Length: 541
Image (cartoon, rainbow, N blue to C red):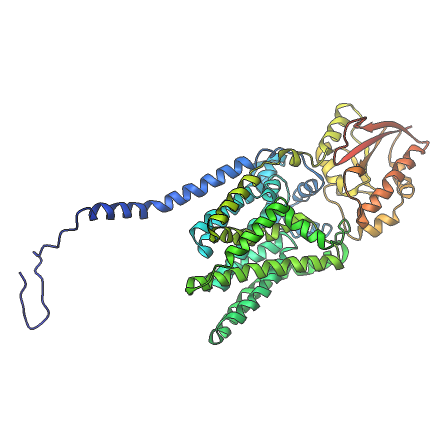
């Protein structure tokens, strides 16, 4: 019973609490069970999507290396701490090659499936990363849509099975853009150093990461302009902190990248026209139809993000991601007009923020958006195995040469397409002497791109052959590795020079009285020409 005093009413310890309404205890129990288990279901759901994606993206994991993959493995075979110095010859940043070097040490080899597995791992990590950032930035439904898009995107399916840095760049670009939005659109200051680190890793993985960093800078300025006046000073200080740390982290590499820009470049690339920009964007998502569907439905869905504090944060997030990607792509296109360095695979830098926006836009547009999402996932669910396996026949050429006894230890191998040397070195193995159209090669695991076009033009076939011929003894072979011209475009300055010089090399050796032509390997006859190379074998008299 209650005892009334001068103070507040007190209730004795023996008081009995009211009985719950019938059924309330069961409902509360079920709600508690769901609260306790929903994260377990989320984890299981993400793991299921990851498993399905691994199955989709491992059909061609044993695919043979093409020209760039030979370079990757060759560079990664150098001493770990010497890789940054080696890359002065190549023009790339060091993160991927140093990671690949460590990966090959851990898994115990440099075989195709073993090195492809690193890319598969990176592509798979885009799924939980996309889910997490999608949920934090746009909500639960967007998280699942983004995870599904990351799991099936054809671009990632292709590069998950290639020994190159593009899958790594995709996951790093996603995390860099997501953390940028968390720090400056949502306003969670804890994410400022996270953004700096992820963006620095992106730039250390691929030079186009610089465009994404600059695009993020432009997005920051737009967000600053949208910020309330009384908060702009603090917001600007946060920007100085984040971007200042990014510059500090990248500072050690700046002298090397300036040297690379001056001496290596990309003479193999052509300046893109506006159609090249559109083709690159649509190829990223598997074709024009899919691109238009995602663009129209996604933008329509994103336009509905407004109202309330949550709507304001999500609108700022769309600005953060959209401006950063748009400016980055524009800068890449403009830079390639002045100094061509354009390739669709470089768009891996922009995949992450694009998928975050696509996932959010599709689910925000209601049933039409969900239908568009379903159609996209069905169209994307394709392993593209034949396309991935058909990148090069270098392994077949090397195998035929060895199986038919057309190459012996000590023979001279001359790569007319110089950067194909490392791939042929991988498949032929050691014990041979190496040269290319520029002359003798001392490091046959990497191609020296420093002023390569000028050196190539100065090194005529007869002049270079005159230097190489004395090193071939009587009875030894000279193996000429020739590019297959008709299966690729050769319009860039570098490739057009190779197209011009390749037949000159063959004529020079055919007319040299000191060599006997044994024949081409392989002999295609009426078969369709593959992509890659063929060999022409000569015997020194």
